[in-house]
Length: 191
Image (tube, rainbow, N blue to C red; front, side, top):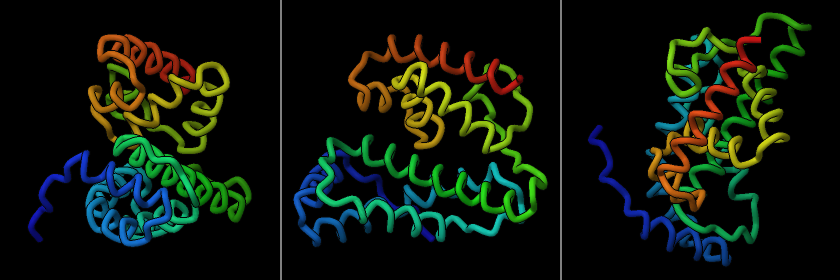
């Protein structure tokens, strides 16, 4: 399969705005444009999960898409915001799935993921998805912008530049805040 050509931010933003205003055809065109990138994001999420995970990237993308379509009259600002919401939706699906599985096993094994270099400069230990979710919720209660930044960088896979644009801050500011957020999460997750 040949990789799809890069999608212009302007194309995606225009379609998002039209879709948010109720244009169903724009929503269909948008789905075609962003599908491969959403699937890569889903695959990246699932790669961090256990091997026998029952969700496939395609199923995760479809579930996330159904939830996104259910958001009527959303005012979409840009491509970065859309991917951030999509990544957050995927995170919620995976966390819900992990909670259901754990509940079914009555507190059985936790699912391990690795945050690689995104949480700390050194190699962190494998982390539990539910522990990461709890840590992000806690960070969000302390500093919503830092929690949003982690979601954009880690879950949406946005670059520093894309995240800075989505958050309307300078790259220098974002870099400084990113270091702080990573250090806080690393300390929190190490217990």
